[in-house]
Length: 83
Image 1 (tube, rainbow, N blue to C red):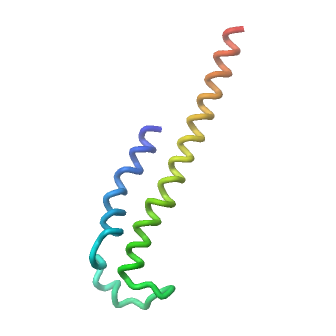
Image 2 (tube, rainbow, N blue to C red; image 1 turned 180 degrees about the horizontal axis):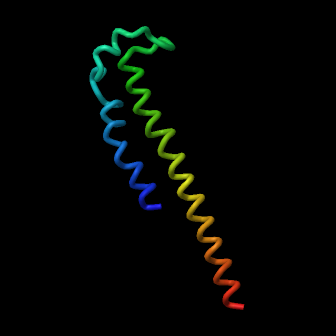
Image 3 (tube, helix red, strand yellow; image 1 turned 90 degrees about the vertical axis):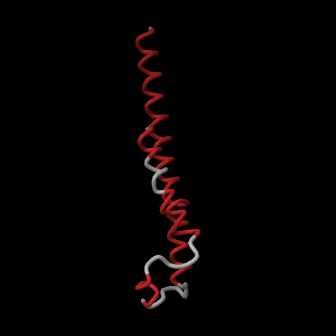
């Protein structure tokens, strides 16, 4: 579970760089046709935001589910062995 949590920390750097940059990182991308009316810079910022706002909670919720399931199984085992 610690590994899963730590795995959300490393992508914080690229996400922050994408969100808070002053210009798009890939010059060629600026020449591509625009999708959804977003500029290359806006698209890059949205990508960084999605990395953190959508990606991290999925991992955190999965970790919480695994933890509470493990804890419930451990309590059941203790109760069974204590009888």
